[in-house]
Structure formats: structure tokens, C-alpha cells
Length: 102
Image (cartoon, rainbow, N blue to C red; front, side, top):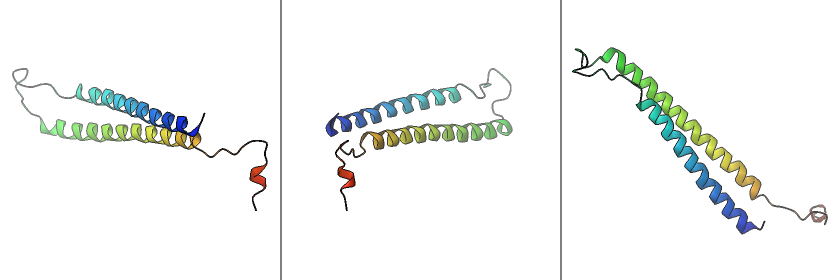
């Protein structure tokens, strides 16, 4: 595979990893949006409970941010390692050219 093909492969891998990371983050966000306190009037006599909801949403929000950050760190790390491996300089095998350097 020549260098131009490797560059196209690195770009395609980056686009694929972005799509995977966005999908995972969307799934995680939907999971948090589906949870919570849904007891609004007229379902109950209490319309707001600040002692329970404030702490709950802060914890959920921080956890969600940490998980999404971890997804992006893994995606960027994977892309970086794959790019370094694909675009590394390759010496010609069997010529001994790397041994001739002073």
C-alpha cells in the first residue's frame, strides 16, 4: 500500500471513529434522559422536590460527562495509534540501508 492509500485509510478510520463515538455518546445521553423524576402535577400533589432532584441531576450530569469524555479519549487514542502504525516510515527490507548510516 503506498503512502497516499495509507493517508486515505487514516482519514476514513478517523471518520468511522467519530461516527462510533457520536453514536455511543447519543446512546449514553438517551439513557440518562430516560431516567429522572417524572412526578409532575397532576400526577402527584408535589410539583418540585429540590432536596432530591438537585443532587441526582448533578451526579448524573458529572457521570455522563466523564463517560462521554472517556469515549472520546479512547477514540482519539485508537486513531492516533493506528495512524502512527500506518504512517510509520518503512525501511526497505533486505537492503541493509539502515546499517549504512554514519
